[in-house]
Image (cartoon, rainbow, N blue to C red; front, side, top):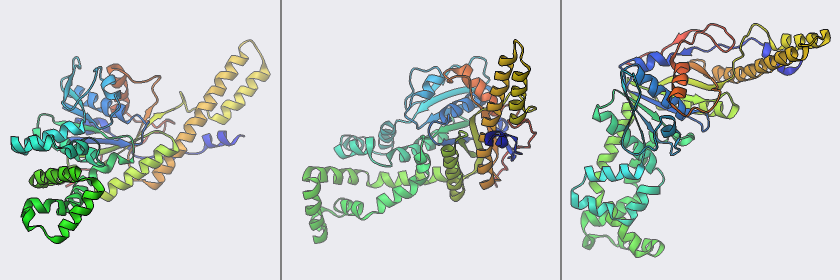
Length: 403
């Protein structure tokens, strides 16, 4: 017996099943954050959950932080931008909207909303601000927190689904309040703010020396741009820090759930473990793990070993259909072996995280690129899931409410 066939015949570990249907139908669920490695179908999962929620009667908006265009394409839209766009879902009792984070546009909106017209114009025209708002490290995470807070505060949607970037940086927005505090409280920023707070004529000799050194390194004009920018944002940044902190706390409160998405591959499940550990360390509410693109066999009644043996017997017996029958049996054996490999990887995850609920979603026949495809995936995510890929019943689990 081959090693692969032996693996297919081993008993398989069970994990509690996640009831995503109940989760999104629950009116107390207000935010769902989908995170995971790249290439695992996270964006499609987010869109499918949003569509299922709209068809369950929710007024939902799905926000993608991933700059790829997959979400717009799957929802039948030409493009997405920083404003929610209505998606036509015929017959749905709820509503579905979709948008993609534009970090510069969001930053501009923050400046306009929290400054006087004169100060806002000065900030928006500042060369250093224009560079910061487009490409500065961490800006995307800050703006993701800002946009999520805006959507939640508007009360226009009773469910927000967030599709995070396809990398470990997907959870960097959790660091936004602390990173903002470190930025504001850093020595460099305090020195740059000093002239605006005390006046240049009262600046210390230390600051003047600092100014001359930095001016030589950065250039006098850039230093003046940075100083003017920081002075203009002196009061506004504090408000942004408070809002980022409030949004961070919102993510920890009842009504928010994180869903980790992975494919049945070693790297993706390693990333899933990282996300689970990180969320646990942050005290964030984890709904469970979606193992996407699995390959369950058509039946588990015939093991890989027996299928391989039967294929040999059929060929030995001969007959006009023997080769076709043997080929079908071998395909089944390969599928059983693949399912066993995927289950083995899932078992390793469950051994490390036995408390994490799991939902498996079979691989689609092709790419999901329209509402019909999203609907099929949504049914796989939220519909009855009484069986594992091997046909063994398992317990349905909805995460407990936190007080």
